[in-house]
Image 1 (cartoon, rainbow, N blue to C red):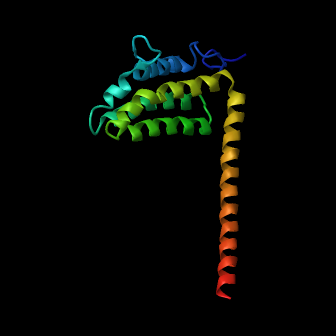
Image 2: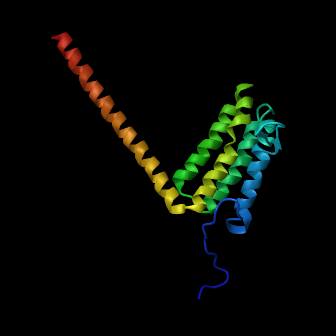
Image 3: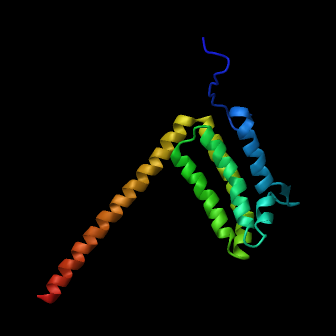
Length: 170
């Protein structure tokens, strides 16, 4: 019989309280605060604190990125695979880096919704962990295959150029 202090991970559908100590629920609330706090009347568009904080020159996007990192931390605590964590980190990095560009970055912040995307990734993993791991492995395999094809293509192009130059010289 398992001791009462042990926790058992249970996959539950999105929209329910998940995780240890409500971390996923807090992550979901933070994503809403940062990305969709206020609905623009007559639209399906929400504006959160992330684009507003991003207006602070120099440090706004850094602060937004740090706040977004909480969702990444929760995902790591929930056992999300590294490939999904890397995708989540990429969302945060893209949002933070593009957000630095004056005007364009601010407009990008309104549309990116990286926190909502990251919570969606987290909830998809928790709902079907084996399927998410398989899909993540598939993406990694595709990236590796693309890199191999690129290297083979570059070698083939190099050989072709060397032969062409050899013919021109002789």
